[in-house]
Length: 466
Image (cartoon, rainbow, N blue to C red; front, side):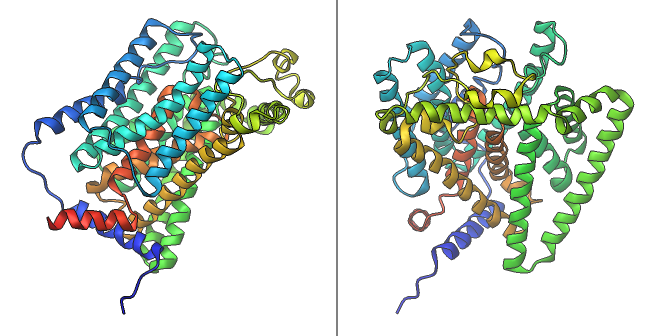
């Protein structure tokens, strides 16, 4: 009688065997022409919105050019890969579940007469998420392609960070308190986690990693924005839980050494940055103290709640909206009952003027746009993807591969997805085109490299025996 192991055991064993194969894999001197073409197109796709910027109302020529380059690169990649779509497992649920959300939200926009410009502006980042997922899923099924995507993600984040800082300071001509959002890229949390990870664990190219980390932390400190730090904390919490999980499963002391290394190194780096700001910019620490411990931090929280409650009140008053939602780009208002809690930091006009851009709380907006059914499916896509990435993280830590350069693209996907998703607790990554696309790309890298379903593992084994 054949003994069938538990699906969780199959998952962990499949992940460990895949990671060990990655570590011993060697490639030939050159790739085929088709693979080189796919790598070039994937780079164009990833870099298309690296020069995107905040603070501009409506579309500009630059943004239209970026959208055209992105669309053409995706179309050519789809033709080259013959539009192969995931057919089973979580990756299929991610694609088809998100497409159903886009379809139902579009029907809701048509029924509720949403202006075309608002509809396109709001739905486009959600479309970029699934496009980025497919591109990375296609290209990352080849290990060299996964390296190309990972390099593209890192360089796109660096370019976006530098360009956003330059654009905000050079073109605005306003005070730092006014442009603090315009100088902060949405991918700054990823750069903080990525550079800190390379500095503490990979221990390679320390000077460059330290320089990137110092720049990102400095701009975050000057902007006095807590969202990136919360996203970094969410990723750190995932790593800590995965370490504890791995320790209790294997009773390995290496996990404890990793925790100690990260804790000591993180405390030292934090102390150095704090001392630097005490000397260079003491007024920045005063602004941080006011926003963190004063009444301003409550205003930030309650405006998120007011937007979420306002969307829910409008949705609940429309019976048709329960099924098809209000549609992408539909207007809403902040809930009036929270106006007294945020005054005088938020003016009363904010609670009476209609808004049509996505709410800053990511986890309620899908219900407003797609209704209770498809909106719930979209939320489940994000939740199940987070669990999936966490399980891959546990498998990597279980093989003690955190300091191994050979699986670097997989680390980029895991860290990139967790940090950008962590922004969803204080901001909405789907407001910005680059962060939405980056979230899909990071998930596609993990899904392309680790199709860790029982059927996926069997199909890979069959391919290897042919």
